[in-house]
Image (cartoon, rainbow, N blue to C red):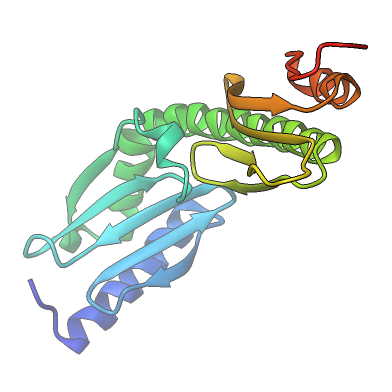
Length: 198
């Protein structure tokens, strides 16, 4: 549903009044089509006036960029008649939306914190491998880190590792000489060498 410029202005004014009614919220973003986002600390609500005539859809939002670890989080939303005004709408948001949204937001934030801690641990493993295998290179995806040392002539170590939140997986590893093998084993926990002689 397309809104006129005047309707969008009215929606913005009502959104500002609702934000004041809730206390401490302010408009952080608007899409220019009747969608507004208000924020207070880690809490963010979206208000859409262009989904259904005369009504506003209010939805609790979660931090973006972490859907891989927060896919399970329930979406919480309510709709209200815009004509009721900011007071009754604010009361509805506080009573009908916020308790369940805040409970799930706490779980989402904890899942994100755990994920970031896992990433820090992965990076520590990556750094340790890079120290042990000077010719290795690394890159990260949204789910894991990879470290690879391609096979080249006169190279002491060639390997391929995958590091995820469950730990390190050795996809392939070959080491020339027991001393290099010992250095790598300190990081990976696996002693692999072409030359087993000490």
